[in-house]
Image (cartoon, rainbow, N blue to C red; front, side, top):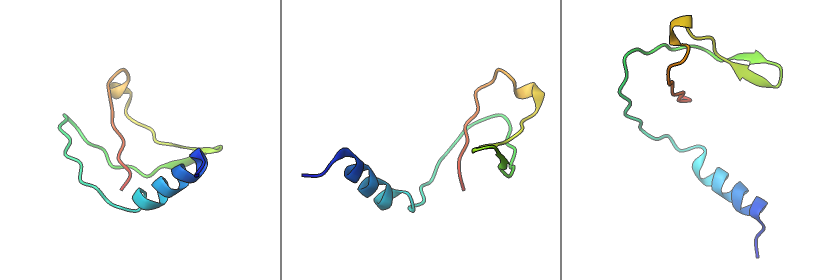
Length: 59
């Protein structure tokens, strides 16, 4: 019997390297590089985008 962690590891190893196609409709697009920020990453967006919905896709 496998544990939840083993199932998660198997799931990630099977799917994390495959590329998928996304079709996104929107009003504007910006391409930026993620910068280091402590233990995380950060992307700065224009102040006009505050309060809007955004989607991030890793390429």
